[in-house]
Image 1 (cartoon, rainbow, N blue to C red):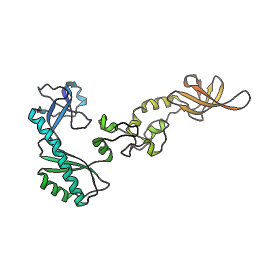
Image 2 (cartoon, rainbow, N blue to C red):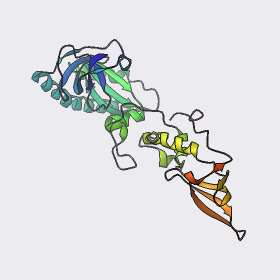
Image 3 (cartoon, rainbow, N blue to C red):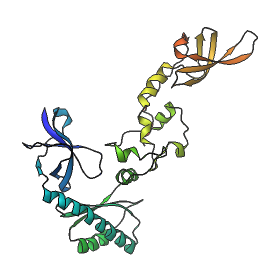
Image 4 (cartoon, one colour):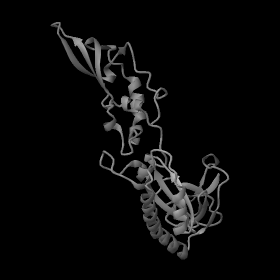
Length: 284
């Protein structure tokens, strides 16, 4: 077991572990830490607690110090200054006519590095842009190309359901989402219906997928012959949420009618849904 604190940076929903040393931290405290980007100001999301060694990527970095009033003031200045850096970079991108969309500008805590995130459809030659930025900003310049999903995660947007996108509010990482998940739920495979603002499959397709996979395996396949209290019938459709089955059956008059049955009322079936894995689908 290892004592750690959980730290968030800016609007990022992901929590990173650090060794608190002998310092006691509470949720909401500011903290100065060293990351791969450099010196950073973070906010404590989880105070001192113990986690299993398997949850830690070693070596675990130690915190440098709990943020002082001076540190908090400098962080506030950095937030204001990065707005200026963003506007400068945007102006220079337009000046050079570069085919890139600026997403975000940020500083390390000590302002030794200015980091600009952008999206682009192809490789961009931004060497002249870096020279211009370094002359004006007086810091080391890092330009980082990101994908559309990362853009939405950073800036946020309203998803088709009317809520702010999950990646911006609570998802720490993007998880595997496949077309099979939409098929399992009986959704329309129209890309406009199952795609998020970023153009990829919606992350929420995964939330209830385990239920659909489990329930689908219990259900007879469409077209299968089932045995009911009314006799043999042919499955016409299934309702996974209500666990009901609509099946065609011949009545006493010889006419074909469609009856609805609960899954628990089905005595047996010739075929069940077994192939519900996602192995044959491309990750989106």
